[in-house]
Length: 247
Image (cartoon, rainbow, N blue to C red; front, side, top):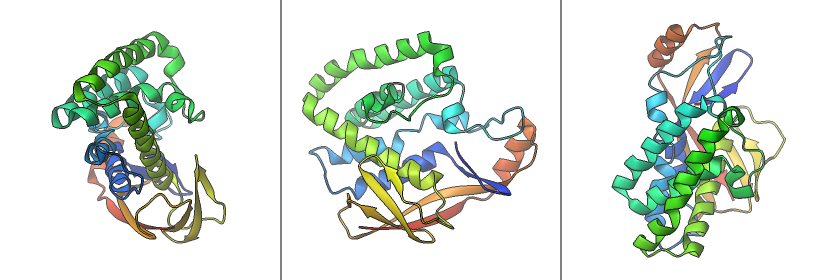
């Protein structure tokens, strides 16, 4: 769950909803490879495993919703394995890309995102290492069976990371009342222009104006117990947030 705190509320985005936004970004990406449809599927579904955990999203001891990078690591590994298996049934190459993504989460996206850290990873290092080794051990064979060379799968992996990171930046960002501060996302910079309107440089999309959307819930900042939060959250109607990105 993506949690952005304001003065009087939490703005919450479920991980599969963030994934749908990443899929929209991938579908409109200008630099495409020969298996672009699989990349779009991988982007759209890369966090589907979270759906199990988010059936009953957790709060910490203070009643604050637990955010994406603070989830219990053993739970994260279990539902990510399940997500990879389910995605692979739909599209084997998309499953390979999500497997690479899952392993990369615990390796700073293979060195390209040093700020990406799962808070509890060090306390479960043996389990993390086993997960990474298990996923990576299958990648070469998996790619060979699909007739995909290393150059292509790594190029598509990095495309997936950009789609994920831009989606996270939008979901975590202050889209309603943006500040004047630009937001740097790797090689890209989002410049606030107006409410729910950004300029991006360089422009990675096929169009000069790209329209995107995601679902978000607003929750009051109350000292929830676990069950109180689940009941409250499930009763909240999500809002469709539309964002315009100008190149």
